Image (cartoon, rainbow, N blue to C red):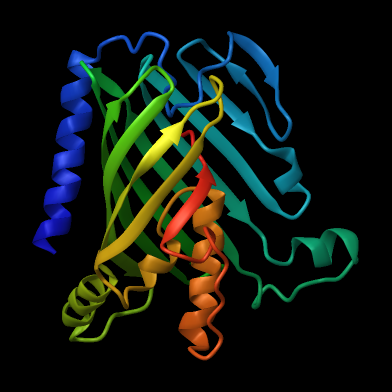
Length: 280
């Protein structure tokens, strides 16, 4: 637990320190989605309004399934971004809106999800530092009760720039359960239960590899991942940030539930991987 705390403290320190020192990265591709021009904007899945260094947007397609959402982004510098995504999901929305069904108020529940992160890129000579800190909160509630879970995760990446579009990198990623709140009166040993859950949730992984950015917006990443701590942590099944990571986690979850169903797909379910780079 101390090691994970040190990882988060180090990432926060690097973020705020490098914001104050942030050098221009020249033509090197940032791992940050650039801000839109001031005014209304429309993308493939979202619409919003940009105020210059901040913007608000929503993804209407999610509204169709009852996942009403809003995103806020703020760019304190060209190489730093704060992002917050909030979803309010009604699990019975499709039944009510499209099938004309009614739901007993006693069974109606809602899910409130928030994912917020701060991410920075700073180039110091031939070295690029990319810290990332994320908070993830999930609240399930109805008319009278609720339970809320808060998870913290993040990474610190350090890379060597071989050119403006090629980077060799090493990365540490970690996460853990931070807290749980509930409306019901907790048992007397609640703190002991919570501390044990925090301990069991901790994970720490490492990656090494290379990235080739073939244009200003996209790149290919090849690397190797290994778990340093938390082989049995449930959060290990949500590690990573790219689509390839999600597939890796999905098949790992299947294997976790059914140890006899081991699926091996090169570069997808293996510890060595190939993926498109993730921009935040």
